[in-house]
Every structure is written in C-alpha cells, then in structure tokens.
Image 1 (cartoon, each protein chain N blue to C red):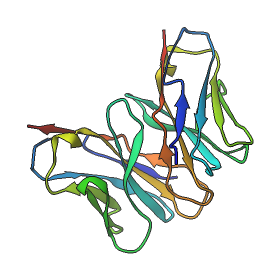
Image 2 (image 1 turned 180 degrees about the vertical axis):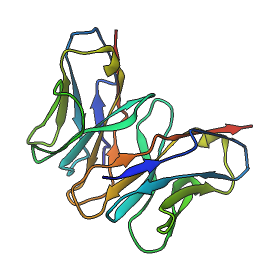
Image 3 (image 1 turned 45 degrees about the vertical axis):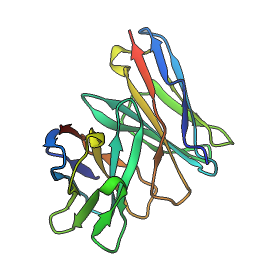
Length: 114
Length: 112
C-alpha cells in the first residue's frame, strides 16, 4: 500500500516570496508522483508529474518539484508567488505500471498575503 | 476537447434518501474513478470503472455503488443517505494505460 504525507496543512506566504510545499511518500513499489491544485469550488487540476528521468520537474504556473528517491520526497516549489496561487495543493502517488488507484495526501492550503 | 463533466453540480437531500450522480469522461477515456472529498477525511477513493467493469474499490460501505455504461459515462449511487455523506464527489477519467487523471468540477452533496 502507498501513503502520502503533507506535513503542513496551512502555509501563509507573502506575495512575491518563494514557497515550498512538502510531500513525503511511502511505497514498496515504484511510483509516479503528482501535484494537483484545487481552487475554491472547483475540481483538481494537474500542476506537474514525475514519471521517470530528470528528477526536477517543471509544471504550469511557474511551479516545479524535485523527486528525491532516497528521502522519498517530492516537494513543490515556486520562486515568487502571486495572489492567484491561493488554493489547496495535493500531492498524490500512483503505483507505476499497474491499474492501481491514486492515493492523495491531506492537502496544504496556501494563502498568499498581499 | 471537452473536459470531464459532472451533473448536477449541487444537490441537497435529506437523511434516508438516495442519490445518483453522473459523470461524463473526456471523449476516448474509458477509465472513470470516483472520489469523496470532505474536510475531515480529505480525498478518498471510492471506485474505478473500466469498460463497464469495476476495477478497483475503496473502503466504503455497500451503500455506495456505481456503474459504467457502454459510452463510458458513469453514475454513482448512494442509498440511505447519512449526514456524514455530505461531501464533494469528484469524478476523474484517464486514457487506457494512461497515468494522468483528469478531474471534473465535482458534485457538492449536502445531506440534511
């Protein structure tokens, strides 16, 4: 079984400051890793994903994430946040190669302070 | 290409009633998954359907059921509603063999 831990339930950040949202996972098999964003009253939108290859993954809206296998982490970063980044962010894992289910973390609410 | 659509967007029911939610996947996507999102439990997997067959199932009671039609549209049904069933129900579709799930806007169910 897989599990995902997002230790920070809420992260307040000043506008134009950098931000890092942390994600750690546990799995006995190889996994694909995802970050999703959810704006108020909307569904989930994919920000970026790691399948294989380069451990630094770039996504939409200026976000990037780095896969660290030894630390089983997949932290999300943005060098300069904007008010429009206010949303909830979910990290998720999917066992590679099979027809398994996506397992989500509990989410991190990012609040941008003007 | 149109995204995943879910109907209705909002629903209010009373305890003991039953409800049916609908999901239309992206054209060409044959896999449909359902998730329940609540403030306390977060995003929990309900079930996945592929080619009209349930392929995976989460840990929900039998009151939660689903089905998929030959055109890949899916419905989920909740019988004998409880207050705790109030949640945002999200549907997601993906291509056969694909790893990315595309989510719909969700159906907000309120049980009174």
